[in-house]
Image 1 (cartoon, helix red, strand yellow):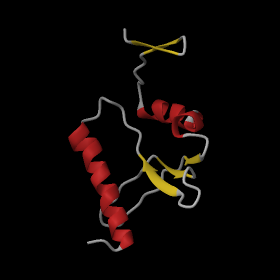
Image 2: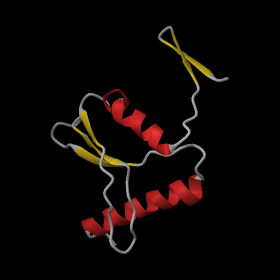
Image 3: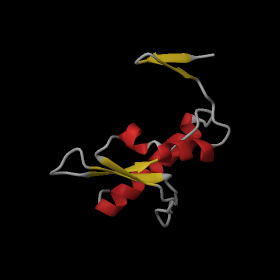
Length: 104
């Protein structure tokens, strides 16, 4: 079994049974994962009209006080195919953002 030792604490590998279970852990620990200067918004809202995709959430990062940033968050299990499943979702997000910004 894989283990990680960090700051004298042992962390054991854990494989989530469902993506929903994994997403809940992300929500509960978002400040530790993304930083104290961020807000994780757990909203599954469809984006796009011709190419539809549903992100797992959004992150507003205030680390750059003069230039806060908005990120689209997609939480995925390692068992999902990185090209067919994850890659296609990322391409859909990029397409949506470019369309909204008027980029061709």
